[in-house]
Image 1 (tube, helix red, strand yellow):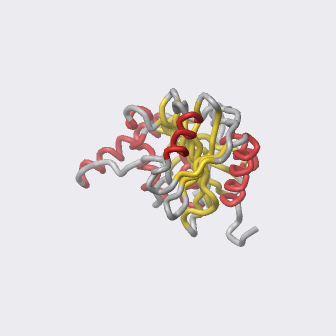
Image 2: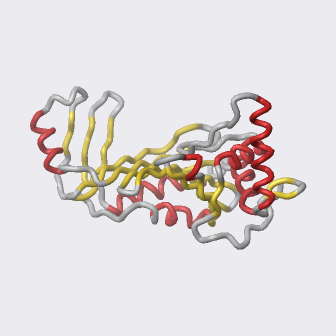
Image 3: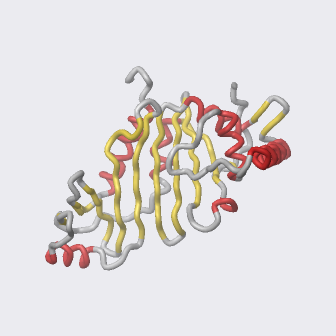
Length: 245
């Protein structure tokens, strides 16, 4: 399917209900990547047919579908699900709740999908917009709250957590949590890839939290420049053409 031109889109994107997205994913023959939660609706075949038919009616009423299929941003959703080479995912938790974001890279574009994980997902839906793939890193970074790096020496916690001194250091550094974040990337042909980044925000600043395969946890200051560097690397992996270029 050739996507129709995307015109008249709000700067923050187009809102889709979950059943509408289920219909588009079914049409594409592919499901949405992590961390989006878009299930397959309907407990039995007949109920599912009714729900998807109703979603098709709402898409047509909104100008997002016609007699020959999806239009506009809805058509871009189908194309991205079918063709994306890779995706960068972002999960953020803060005062406004938890949000999941995935940016799918396809052709020369990135489709950015943002979903609130707090409250009723059926009501929240997903907001979707298309950007040029060279603007993708900046768009994702703009969603991350600006927090300065914590001023602290590295802290290491053993797998069993039985290090009173290290635990006391963590308690001083993070007397309370004001936010958390997680970045990762997926290649369509190879699953999870690249180095994932997780962080925690507190009154004293932002720290990176890393868990090794054997259970050790390291806590280190995370500077804004290091966050940008990690994001740029994940975006580069997601954008890479299938021939490695």
